[in-house]
Length: 134
Image (cartoon, rainbow, N blue to C red; front, side):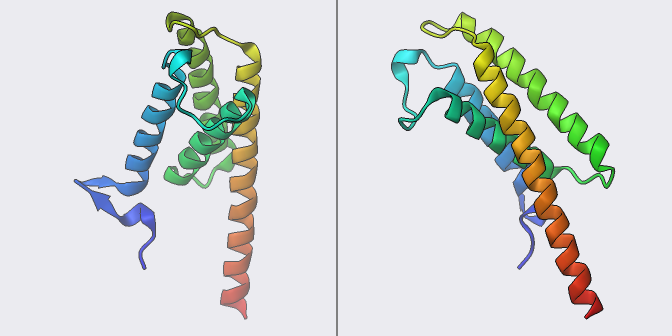
């Protein structure tokens, strides 16, 4: 079975297509008026954490630089800039207000995703090396 990164849909890698759809979905979800909340009933900060965890995981997956510090640094910066813009633009939506605590939850989601991805990558590489050696 081929990895998902090698599948193409209309000439676009499936993983990148998933990232684009996900990003559009979270943008739409955070810019609907608050009276139209279709999301599952959970704490607002948990939603922010999970949304940005997912975004950062997908960004980690679709990028492939072996320079992890630079790669994850750029991913963190992109996610945090987007989180700030997202919070600021919510003030333009009826019933929504920017909240610095939402930004903090977003940042924790990004950090947790990058840490999780890196840990899983290390485990995967260690197992691959052990399999080749033994």
